[in-house]
Amino acid sequence: MRCGRKAQGSMEFLMTYGWALLVVLIAIGSLTFYFGTGSNFLANEGCYMSPGFFCGDFKADEGSVMVKVSNSLGRDLAEISFTHPSCTLGSDNPSLEDGRDTFLTVSECSFGVEGTYIDETFILNYSFLDSSLDHLSDFKVGAVIEGGSSQGMGGGGDSQGGNPGGPGTGYQPDSQTVLLLKFEETEGDIAYDSSSHGNDGSLTNGPTWETGYFGSAVKTDGQNDVIRIASDASLNFGNQIYPRTFTIEGWVKDVQDNRDGIMGKRDIAQDATGYSLGVQGGKLAIVIRDNLGEEIILFTDDNIIGSEWHHFVFVFDEENDRLYSFVDGVEQNTDAQIQGFIGDFSNNELFRIGKRRFYSTAVFDEIRISDFARYP
Image (cartoon, rainbow, N blue to C red; front, side, top):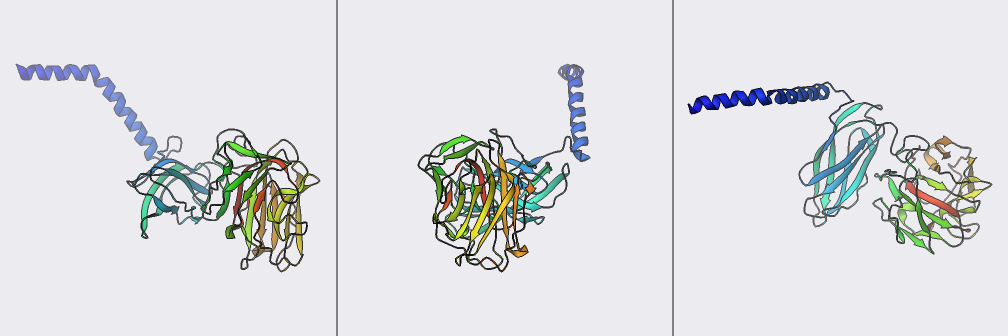
């Protein structure tokens, strides 16, 4: 009798709840179908790391892959980075304390076009602060490639990519980033460098925190405000062995015509050796002057004065004998030839934002310098 009651109870259960189980099975079958056929509408996206690491977020676009890595190994890392055979540039290699996280990006990748689904294995490289041994670990990313390139125009993929005043990733450091001031601190007198070179900026005489193109930004008042960065070999391109190549880029708005006061690594003397950016007649210009007095000046064609955000890029590409400039993704005047003309322009000066000879009024966001030719 007990067995009979059990069987009867089982049948009643199936008759009562069987429809619900059937719906669940159909749903699972549908998901398997979509994932299994590679449909990008319901693609199985995920980021999977080995024990001790956690992938908090990830993004793939046509030129790069970005991951947010958390360290839960119980030990501080001296450095951490990752690479992939399809990416020319590996990520930056910052230190990472236990319990903290960081963003890492590989770029110059060739995974496919927008909308393509990728399922790739990356190599994570790391070492502990208390050990000299290097370690390797695989991790996988499955993702649909988003439009644009996060290393080109600050994550937006177009000339005005992103959300002014709203959330956004902006630039992320890679192995050839030597300075990246994201200005996301929102308070205090230090703007921390997101590259591995420690080129932090000191806010001097009261620059103010403002709404940025991505998150927050810093404004200088044109009176005495300046952001000072100590002289470092990573920013001193003038005396490097040929080819000497570097890129200066960022976002600015509310710029006034303050001549040569935007930013640069030059003394305040009029004929100082080094490189700097300034504004004259509403046009942004780069000035490079060597220790023999030879000088290159390249103005943009477009006016950057006004309350709108403008994205600028200057590329000193000695290997290709050109000095290039871009405003809002549009190539500007590129008449400047540099090979065999400009000599040693190295110096021991600070890198200043908001001043050279003259102080500038402007709002600055996402200022990045790279030691290679990074075109938008």
